[in-house]
Length: 88
Image (cartoon, rainbow, N blue to C red):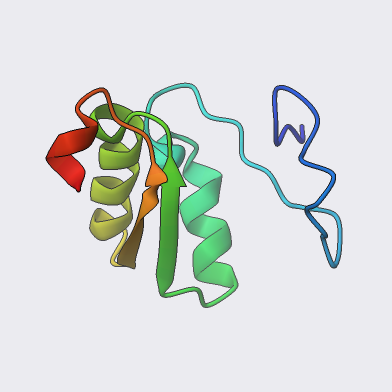
C-alpha cells in the first residue's frame, strides 16, 4: 500500500524515483513500524521534520525518531502551530 498525500503532491516537487510512503494511524510518522526499519536498512541516521501541529504530530514524530536512535532536525518555519508565537 503506497499513500503519500491525501491530495496530489505539489507539482513543483521533483522526485528522482517513485517516493516510498508509510501510511500512519496515529500522530507519529513512526506509528508505522516499517518506517524505522526502512530508515535502518538505508543507513539513515538523521531525519528532518516539518509539518502541521507542532504540539501533536511533529512532536510525536520527533520523540519517536529519537527513540529510534536518529538525530532530529526541525525546520522552524516549516512547522505550523496553534501557538505560533511560542516557536518563534
